[in-house]
Image (tube, rainbow, N blue to C red; front, side, top):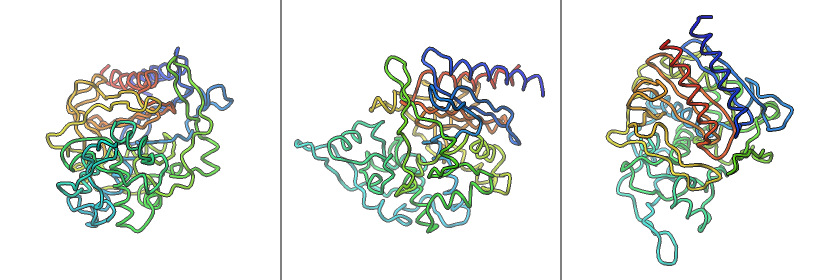
Length: 397
C-alpha cells in the first residue's frame, strides 16, 4: 500500500464514520474508488436500517435510481456500433409510440392541458442528452400539475402509461432532466426484441461480472437490501420500511429501475475508465467510448434541478456557477470542479442520494451510496463531496 493510498483510506474512513454520526445522520453509506484495474478503496459505515441489527456492508443492495441511466445509454451505444441504431433518426423508427406525443402548450381556463404537434421529431440523441422535451413531476411544475390534477402516473409505477407524457418544449431546444432515458430503453427494446433487463444481463452485466444488479429483487438480493429513509424538516430520519420499487415492472425503466451493489457499479465505472473493456470481455469499442464522453449538447447547458415535490427532492445543482454539459451517458463538468475533479470529467447521481464520478484523465472513478429522500440531502451530499475531495488531495499530496 502506497502512502497516498493509505492517507486516502484513513481520510475516507473518517468521512464515512462522520456521515453516519452527524447531527442529522444517514443510516448507512457504502463508498468505493477504482482505478482502471481495480478498486483502491472500499468502505461501509452505519446500518442498512436506522436502529436495525444489520450493519451496512460492501455487498449491500441499493435502489440505484438514476445511476441506471448510464447503463441504458451504454446498451444504446452498443446498437450504434452494430449499425442497428441511428442516433439522428426519428426515435419512432424503433418505438412508434413516441411519435404520437404532443407538446404541452399551457393550460386552458378550465385547467385542461393544451397541446400541439412538435416542430421536429424526437431522435435517440435527444433522448440520451435530455433534450427531447420530457421532464419529471418532482423537478417540473407543469408535470406536477399534470400528475396532481390530471392523473399522470409517476415514473415510479413503471407502467407504460407513465411514459406517455406531453413534451415540455420542442425537441432539441433546451436541456431538461426527465424520462428521456426511459424512452431510450424502449428504443433498445424495440431494436432487440428483448426486455431491457435481458439486454443488460447478456450485453453489459455478464462481460463486466455484475452478478448483483437487476430490475427486480429476488430473495437473494432482497436479503441484503438497504432500507429507504425519509429526512424530516427537523433533520430526523424515518425508515420507509414499505418502500420498494415494484418487483414485477410492466416496463423496465431505463431511467431509474435497477437495484444493485456499489461493487457491481464500480465494474461499470472501470469499463468507462478503461476504454470499454470489461473483466470478461469488451462492452464498447475504445472509439465509441471516446466519442460518447464528449459534449453532445452543443451550446446548451445543464441547469439546476428545482425541487418541486419536497418529499422527493430539494433544489439541487452540481457545482453551482460552473458550466456543465452532457455527453451521451453522463454530465460533463466543463471547468475544474472545487473537489479537484478536472474539466471534462463525467458524473451523475440517483434520487436517494447516490453520487458517482468518472475521471478518465487521471484514471479514477468513485461511487457514494445512501438511501435517503429527498434528493440533495445535506448530510449525504456533503459527505460525498468531502470523499471525492479527499481523493484528489491525496493525489496532489
